[in-house]
Length: 595
Ligand code: GLC
Ligand code: CA
Image (cartoon, rainbow, N blue to C red; front, side, top):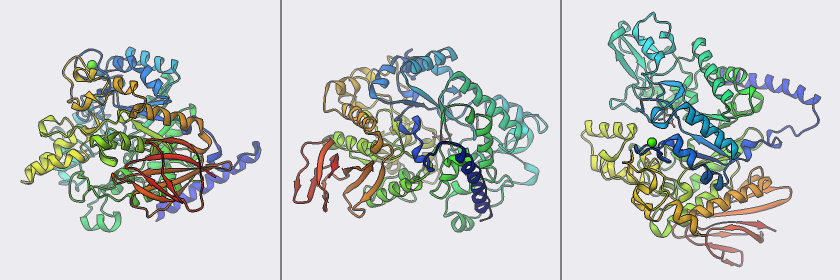
């Protein structure tokens, strides 16, 4: 409670200062909405570099390969590329364990390859957003090697230690460990160190000003090189209660709704660290920032992105992608997830930023299964329509869309039959947990096929129907999906009705109709309709209706006294209107003007 009041007081006082500033400037609307920014109007395309294009035949995507495909990316019509981490890393968690923030992962190439890639991007008017992973680094980072060498080492305090003479530290979760523990004993100095992910990812101590200085200097070096922004990995985790009190299950349930994510993260220093980062780094450049992190709620999101607070630009929420999992299982999808709940989540989040700040929208990324397998229908007869429907949703909502590579082709989950096919540290650890508990291993593998295993979304990009989809001439690090025969760039470029060409059309529409589709007001209609997601977007007296069928049985929508005018886009043929009832075909999506 105290903390909330303090934050409110802080934002009020900052707000007053900037109000005074406003009086000196030419009159502008007081809401952030009036402030147009390139990163609000952009479509961000996320590339998982390991799986995009391999140039040297070692089976791993690399920067040279990526650079060779920039014309493809540019042709999609997108503006910004977000790349998952490409820094030096032993790859315990595919680059989210960084051993040198100032160098490039050997498998991906060299700094010269990076410079060439960035220059080729900028030549094409594409901006580059890098991943910033600073809650933790790799246990192979020089800081950690030094820190673990003795209790008095200069770098000791860059990490969180618990001396063993104090007994065992209170439980904290370690996401990628079979025993579930976030502490690891290090015999060299008879201490435990904290790692919220794997033991290969020791958490950095942000309470140490020296550490913060190093991170800010590193960020400045990347901005000086010309990068255009950062997506900040699990950023609310950087601040935590470092007295590490015992948290009982009862406390967790009562105070934190059962979410460790809330307890572990968002500690007292969080916003002062981000304000310091803004002052020391971000404010100096015309760049964009995005906060990623479980535990961000509707109540706290504005604290990250309120322009008056001078922290970050945009925030991710997890409410959408967390919907529809069966409790008690690892990312097992409930096939009867509720569209009504889905609509409520995205509508509530739109209202968070209705007057101030700016949101984001996404349905897939490298931590999620493929969007069509999860939210659409990847059966051959519905895959194309439902991919296009989901694309229509993402690109017709307010907030910057983060679109995951391969979704523009309608790529699907790979649905591995064997644990040996998986490469992801998370899935392997979860499998280990089930095994140790004598659980149902077959059931686990089945659950992942339509469920949330991250490798479902990480398989190599499908360029052609040729060997390994032309991703690599060698053996791919993760299997290529067999459905490359139909789902691939070459085939889809030639087909005017392909998922790929629909994506391009929809991107163009969002650009052409910026006032309405980017900035316009959003209103949910018919909120209890279990089959159809309907909403309007409007600006400057113009209004459009977006209709999306989320069911293989289609759905109906009652127009009331609205009259349909011009059709902006439609993923299937005609839209049958009978009286004022519109009947949508399975997974139909359309945007029409309203008279
Ligand atoms: C974020 C990343 C995920 C990674 C984790 C630890 O959630 O998106 O891929 O495993 O942080 O860095
Ligand atoms: Ca390679």
